[in-house]
Length: 360
Image (cartoon, rainbow, N blue to C red):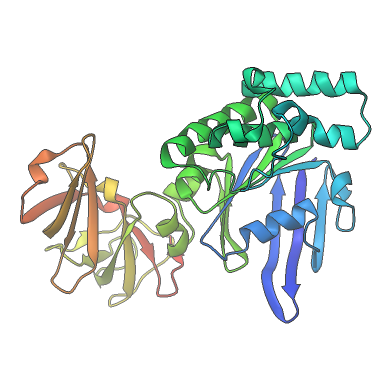
C-alpha cells in the first residue's frame, strides 16, 4: 500500500487556480522532495497534505485512508517549518515534549520518548538549555526532535534549512539524510535548492506553475529529463542550450548542425524522425565537455572560474550566441585564455522541440 497518494489534487483561491491537478504516489519509507522555483506551488501542496490548506478538488489518502476533511492532528503527520517556532521560555526537553504533554501522555512516557529522540539527534547535552542558548543548527534539530516524538506516519519538511548559512546547510543535509536512514519513515521535503533535492531524495518531484513537470529518481531526472525546464533546473551548473538544425539525412542517418561546431554531427538513432530543416534546441551539460570528444566546439572566453578542484569556463560559440559553460577538473590551463576548444560526444546531446518538449 502507498504511504501517501494524491489523485487529481487542485487548489483554488477564488478564480485563481494554483495547484492544477496533481497525481502522485509516495511509497512507504520513501524520501520525496518537491522542488521548483518560487511560486510553483510546492509549499501549498505540502500544506494541503498537512491539512493547513483545504483541498479544492481531488483525493488525498495517507496509509490508504481518505484525509481530505480529517483534522491535521489526526492525519499521522508531523511538520518541520522553515521557522524553528520554539518556545523561548521552555528548555529543549520541554519544547520536544510539549505536544505529548498537550495530548495528555504520561510524564514517564514523555521522558522516554524525548530521550530517544535526543539520542537520535545527539541533543542529550543540550536538553536543559533554552533556545536562546543554541545555534541555528541546534535549534533546527530540536524542531525535528519535536516532530520525532510524535512517531508520525509521514514527516513533512517545509524548506527547513533556508535560515541557515551555507556551511551549516551542508551539515544539516547530512544530518537529515542520516535521520531518514535511522528511522525509515516516509518523508516529504520542500526546497527551491536543486542541490538539496539531488543529495537527499529517493524521488524528486519537479513543479512549475502548479503542475508536476516530472517525477523520478535524481539520476533519471538528470540523465533523461522530459522537457527543457527539467533539464535546465536539475544539475549545477545548469545545462547549456544551443540552437540546432537538421541539415542532412533522415531515419537512422540524421545530421545535426550546431552553433559553434564546424562539421555536422551524426545523431544517435531516435524514435522520432526529423525532417531536414527542422530547428531544435540542443542541450549539453557543462560536465559533458571532455578532451577526447569526437566533436569540437570553440568558445571565445568571457570568464574563467578556477575553484581548485574544478574550473568553469564561460564563453560564446558565436558573437551573438548565448553563454556556454564548460566544467573540468581543476584545469588551470584555461585561466588567461582568450579561446578554448572543447571536445564532446554527440551521444551526450539532448534534443528539444520549439515548445521545450524532449525529442527521443
